[in-house]
Amino acid sequence: MALIEVLSDALLDALVDQVFREMALPEGEDWRAGLRTRSVSERLALRRHPWAIGLVESRTAPGPITLAHQDHVIGYLRERGFAARASAQVLAFLDAYVYGFVRQELALPADPAPVVETARDHGGPSPYPNLEALVTEVIDAGYDFADEFDVGLDLLLDGIAALRG
Image (cartoon, rainbow, N blue to C red; front, side, top):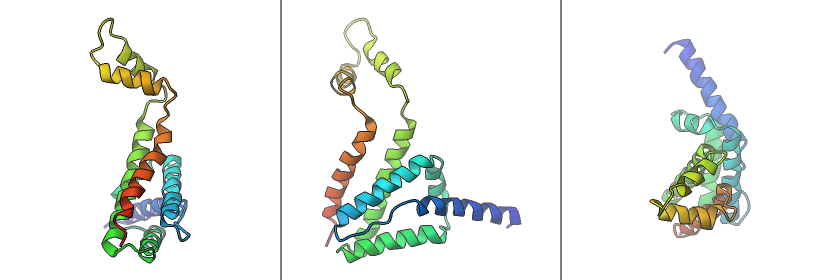
């Protein structure tokens, strides 16, 4: 392997470590509160660094900060009654949810008006009646996708409770 490849890999791994350094570790006896804190912090770190999701997912040799973070989360879960497999599942499910939510959040148009107008601008019976109803009943009422993070996180944490031994 050429020196430049080694240096490139080291730099990319260091960037991932920096993102993990910014994520809060779960703490406290209440596992739900601890995982919520970590998930919210993870979301904020990934929003600050939109390039990070793809990079984190592409690295095959995590750095020491990333490994220490993952080790802490797994230990935290194990100490609160989650088996080894359940701990791995919880970590995977939470990361998939947070990464996916942030990807959608970053991809949404800053101005939803063109989408809304397309759903409404048809000059007759709507070819998209369900989309039009959603726009009328939800979007017009002040919907903000960012507010849905906590709703989804609560649903996920409710499901995670079933994994706890």
